[in-house]
Amino acid sequence: MRLRLKADGRIVELRDGQEFPVQPAPNAAPSDTGPLAVRDLRRRACLTQMEFAAKLGVPVETIRNWEQGKRAPRGPARALLAVIAHAPDTVFQALAKV
Figure (spheres, rainbow, N blue to C red):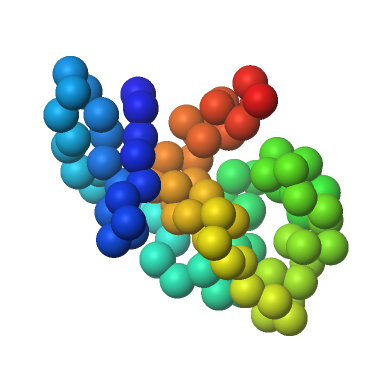
């Protein structure tokens, strides 16, 4: 499955050169990437802060700061979290190959 994050925040699946909207999973986090959403994403993946940080390739302090509301994910990190909310297994599988 190939996914693409569109500029307007939608996630689409690419099949045969066409784009098909991906519906969020029923238990997907809201599009908000606030502290509770980041913590919820990590917990739904059954990962510790250290494991989640390692999978995303960021320092564990970054995850802590996001979850405590000291900082908010921006740019690519925010986009990656949005994709994780829709297709966590696919994202983690792709990141494991990097």
